[in-house]
Image (cartoon, rainbow, N blue to C red; front, top):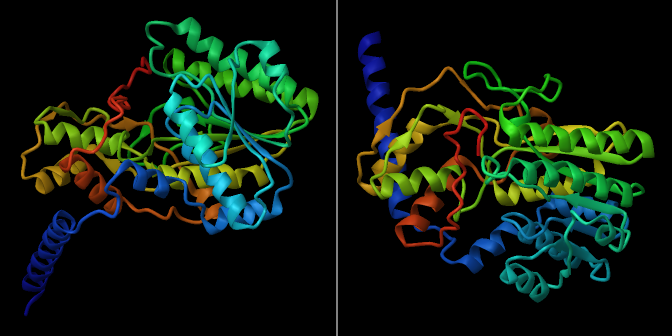
Length: 370
């Protein structure tokens, strides 16, 4: 066999293996078949979380715990305390709790809940002081209509919290959108790169980081800026958005050519583990998957699984919001769930009519207006 024949044979084998992989994904059922199973998955503590909780002193409070991630993160801490034989340690979830389901679910799993409007300084002052804070409060969607509220939520709330909990260690949820768009040919934005975002939302997130940093420097608080980009579960996220568009024969815009994603359980685990990585001045950590996900290729993969030809619109730009998550891999290792598993589970979830939160990520947006 000459060189050309060898290359052709390898190409055929590679193609066959790729087709077999897709066939197996289409026929292999997901282990996540209900909301209960999904939330059990998303709240299962990893070995790293258990090690962190053993070495971390005191109770944990999650501020802004009523959103998409907060309930499973708080539950992961609760399950972690149980697993290490320290059930007496408190997990406190704080939110306005516009969703009573979230509060009821947390109660049923042993998490204390405190309703609180974090915009009200006096309400924040009445919160119990605990040594460990995970701050998840903020606003993104609706910014275009109410930029004033977005700025209030993303800067005034941090001031209220930073002043009250200045003796605590604080992990502050932020976003990769604080960086500018970067070339798709590079590694993505690094923690040391200058920030320069587009739009009110991302700029208000810079404001959030600046307010917390100001109080960290003036009051001596130990913090970490948790710059998370596209955590997903099966009910929302970049993969759910693309998969549903393909399934419903709606156009998939590829102008934003790629995105970084991470399974929500892995993001939850990294946030909890970051409590032992806070510092003064505040540490900064990019949290996402290492390899960017091509929007076009993902649409094509879902198309093969659903037996549909995806409707592709737009032309890939040369830049995107992409992030170098190398430091988080060095600290915590790779995520436990890879892209193939996420696609497989999302495919089965959509095909079997799984719940949709109706909260699209708007990953296509390039001007920062959400």
